[in-house]
Image (cartoon, rainbow, N blue to C red):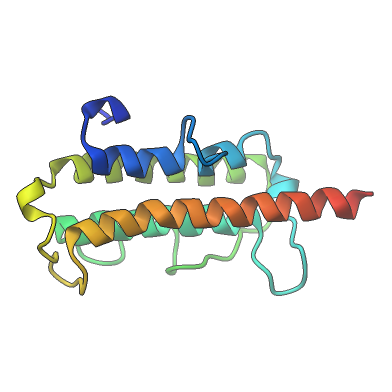
Length: 165
């Protein structure tokens, strides 16, 4: 399966990809914010009942899957992790599990780029089945979702560094 890139000259695909990987004018991307983290760091919580970085990564993968599912008309329940939206980390949470979550996020991003590239400009203002918003808003929203959660990841990393002092 060929992966779309920013060079496709599709502004929607470029927007989605800019928030996830590569260099972005706004700073680090979601993938960049996860780079180099160990499983222990990814599972660190800034406080009780707060999400950790690994949960945020799984959550972002889930919402990419959800957008793809809406465009394709797929049935619910085919996401590789059990549940929806926010997922409990498996015990033990170790390096292989953390690697699987990052691979899942990458795979869902690749599928999202493929689906986004198939949406023609004439379809941008149409709402897909099961959605209350247009294709364009849905695609913009998923791009912004990555940027929003990147900020959370960066904040958690800063809190983690402070806690180590």
